[in-house]
Image 1 (cartoon, rainbow, N blue to C red):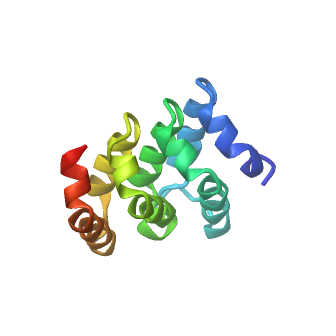
Image 2 (image 1 turned 135 degrees about the vertical axis):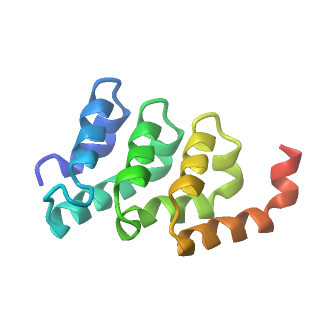
Length: 127
C-alpha cells in the first residue's frame, strides 16, 4: 500500500525497475499474493501505463506484468495498447511490449489486439 502510489516512478528508474519487476513476479499465480495486493499494484501501474510502455526501464515492468499476471490483472496493458495501437507498435520500446502482448494474450485479449491491428493495418504498414 505504501509503495503503490510511487510504483510508476520507481519503475521508470534504472534501479527501481528491477525491484518493480521482482514485485510483479511475486504477484503471479502460486506466489501467495492476495487479490487485493495484485489489484493494488495493477491499479497503480495503470495510472501511468503509456509512460511505462514507452520508457527504457518501464517497458520491462509492463512486459513482466504480461508474463506473470493473470489476464484480469494485466488487462489494463491490453486496453492501452488497443487504444493507442499505431503509436505503441511504432515506438522503439512500445513495439517490444506489443510483441509480448501477443505472446501472452488470453483468447479474449488476442481478439482485442488482432481486431485493432486489422483496423489500423494501413497506418501500420506505412510506418
